[in-house]
Image (cartoon, rainbow, N blue to C red; front, side, top):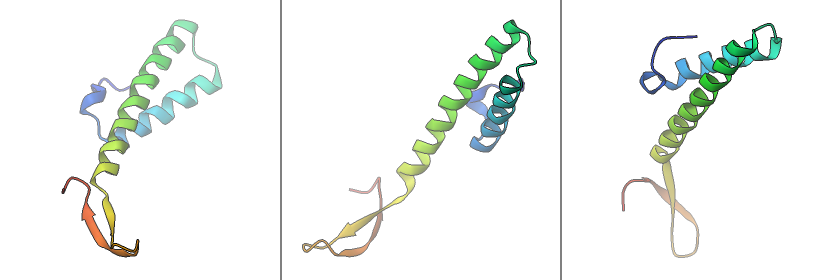
Length: 80
């Protein structure tokens, strides 16, 4: 496990560590206490990744429509 605080990790770093955690848990060769710690770290990593994905989704452009429902272009989601 990385010693880097999860909140400081990029999406890619957090996802890579989460994959390692899942791999270790799936193999089942980790002592119970360590498995619990891995599971807890994995839960935090998962939540962090979900937050990063949500941030990215909010930056994606929204499709604008005309009065008849036809696409006319895009605008950033944070523009009113």
